Amino acid sequence: MPKTPETVEVEFISPRHLAGGGDPAWITVPLHRACGWSHGNDPLMPRVILSSPDQKALLRLEPDPDGQWWTLHHAPTSDRPAWYASFGARTPVEITAAFTDALAAPVTTSTAWADPYEPLQQTDWSPAAGADGLVSPDGTAYVQRLGAGPWFVTATLGPDRMVWQARFGEHTPPYLIAAFTAALTDPSPVPRTDSPRSFPTRNPDLVTRSHREVPAVQVASALEERVQALAARRAGRTTSPSALRPPPPRNGRSR
Image (tube, rainbow, N blue to C red; front, side):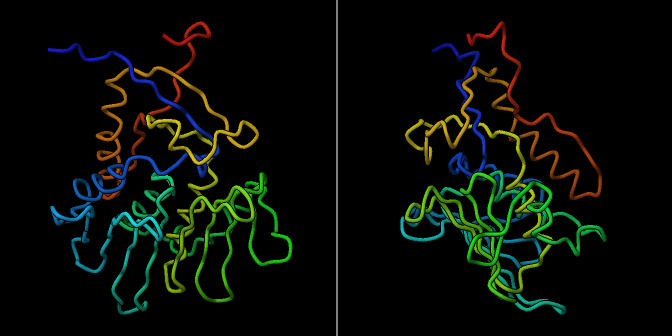
């Protein structure tokens, strides 16, 4: 039997919106295990479908090279028309998960009226030149709302090099979009074990990449800790999971 490696090579990347998509299980597994979303899939099709316990929300993951990979449709309620949200393939799962986590967790008075622009304004995003909306300090992310209509969040490497786009219908609850924009501005790097070829860019002027060897048990337990944290949040409790974070360098070297 081959020996299990003690460490795993991990890249910690910032800004997170240029880190690539990541593992879809970061979204789907906690929704299913911690929040009771049921799943269905067609073994002949590369897609996953999750439905909320009340059957009002349907999340579809369907790889489409020309469209949005993640699409969430929510049925109308007594106080809100039907709405949707969608996320491109390279939208980091950590940012998309902030949206789905907020949808699955209890709504509090402090979050119900959250402003999606507020997290951006608190992190020095500035008005975009010649258009409505705000742009990140490095110019690679842009958030706008078309009048009173839909919202668009776009990560780009230039005028003709869109990395990903998230779209929110005009009736999407603002607190959910605010959860997304708060995660978008989080300065913490995100871990990736993918091949560097899958990253949107390796330009050192745009991204910071820190290579570390992380204990394999820590990598393996990160998703389980996330499931437990979301379950506790959904139950109305607070928790501080030890999510996968960059460990301190060992004498400046990696093993």
